[in-house]
Image (cartoon, rainbow, N blue to C red; front, side, top):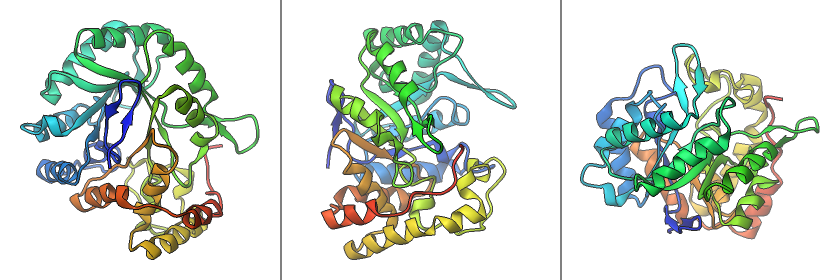
Length: 329
């Protein structure tokens, strides 16, 4: 199954591969490079096209890894990377200065060993720089032939006015501003069975304008795979160690969500992860889930979710699952 997004009809495939876990955030020790290379190769062989990375992952090591992986296979992949965040010893800061954007792009091209980046995403807007200035510098990269299309990463929704609600209203205002400068081809935002907030406002905005949605964390940081057990520990630098949904209490409370996904999966001879990804795919033809994976097995399993067609009964059953408990609000 293939999918195209944006006005430029970018061929991104149906399910992407989030490369971040191979070298950032989910382990204190980076995975061996050869294992990561095998994971990328397995994904490409399974029909995955979209490889999603960023200069900050590592930092820099993830792009170097993908550059190695794509030697001789560049035409098989749709390459997406990001700029706009700098990693310090204790914190991450945004940098949207035009000069930095140009330098960051050149550095990413070198690390990725390619002449062009298919999708260049602004990881976060810099509050000290008008977003139009940052976006204008990124647009110049398209004109220069270094980048094919531009996207915005807006991974998490902000708290809304109603207690417990979350909204992408601020992101939409930002998108409307930069759309006046240069077309937005894709927005990367969190979307999953247990984080469906994107459907309320951001998804309709993108659908009406032909903007693709790259669904980040479509497996709920691994919880929706059914392989994580309540009470299991996480390494200190793993973001789940600080996430309210990954306390032992909340992981136990959210088990009915996994049980429901497993029930649907059993009818299809599939896995809960594949059902979760198939649900994301059913949210629109402009939506592409980008699950992270460190191992070959998971990359291939995720890719095969594109073959799973959920029935109306399946969708109704998933819609009746209880909302996830535990949030940042």
